[in-house]
Image (tube, helix red, strand yellow):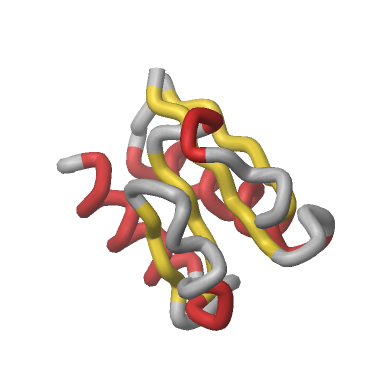
Amino acid sequence: MKRIMAVCGSGLGSSFMVEMNANEVLNELGISGCEVTHSSLADATADQADIFITARDLEDSASHLPNLIILDALFDKDELKVKLQEKLGC
């Protein structure tokens, strides 16, 4: 099972919205076997997920996390879909 974690500064609003969008996109793509969660950037550790999603403005702060998806437009589902497909190889 692939673990995907959305991270933001506080771990509340925007990361939760990205989690919901990621679940929606995965369902649209017919991809199962992924667990999507969210967290604050400060609490996220490299072992908590296989793929991390964050906003462009947090890219430098998230450099300790592996396999990053950096979103230019945090709530753009089309961008998220393209980048998830690239990371998941589908």
